[in-house]
Image (cartoon, rainbow, N blue to C red; front, side, top):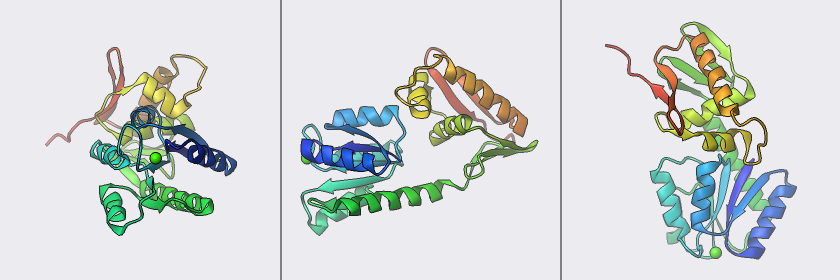
Length: 228
Ligand code: CA
């Protein structure tokens, strides 16, 4: 899993970073709400560990803003406060789980893995994009012309577009989300793969879904309405 840890207490942050890395996860850490917002804009995380009390923001306010923007990444909230009222508030605001400090690290790992399993099974079904079906579990596009297999990069790129159809996704956002923040290869890799993905859409027989270039910034997935 790729996990974002948002925690301002250095010792706690280090413990989480080290522990989760040892468990085989890729961990990014930040210590303010502003940096957390920035990180989430530029990378796709499988789960977020979010501290309630941050120096510049309330974790709960941050979470509320994310959910209002349509972010669906599972969030586990950490807090020093353990009253049931706060737990209810966290869950109602969109937290998927909640742990009170001090907590058992093994329990945190188990809960994160459970969140990830639930989220993956929820996204394994097919998504309709205009006149094609996007089958995540099979990594296929299925349309009037048949089923077309996607490569791993094409699949990740389409996932990024399908997350927010219609929204402009910048090249740097797509590059960081699909190839990782440390990608050092060809600068036009996003354009090349958008080209591959367009060919796959055509091969599947898509007529109402396309990837449009947005001059000077990036691309967006365009789904046209069915003609009456
Ligand atoms: Ca804190």
